[in-house]
Amino acid sequence: MNSRRIILLAHGSSDKRWCDTFEALADPTLKAVSNSRIAYMELAEPSLDQVVQDGVAEGAHEFTVVPLFLAAGRHLRKDVPAMIEALEQATGASIHLSPPIGDNPLLGQAIKDVVTLQLDQNNGQ
Image (cartoon, rainbow, N blue to C red):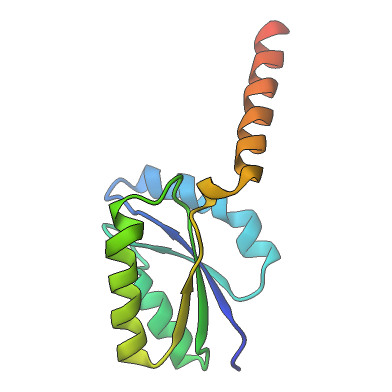
């Protein structure tokens, strides 16, 4: 099996409630997109390293990392690329880092929809 794996990458937190929120956000994608997984950059499991290592052990050699970040700060400009480079060297995998979801205009539309819905609910009370 050599199909591309999709990794939804969240920052991570030692607070389980934080992780639960991201897992709920990722759930529709995990159900709809085969070979997709969630991983955390730090402070939570499974780590990016573990998800890539597991994928390679299962025969996958191509991965796309989709950061669940609103913008590309230091982590996405330096830390994550360094992690990916080390993983590629250690595993022989090819790992593509996508832009953060915050760069996609669809997220702005979704935020507007949530705000509009909240306003409608508040006006109905």
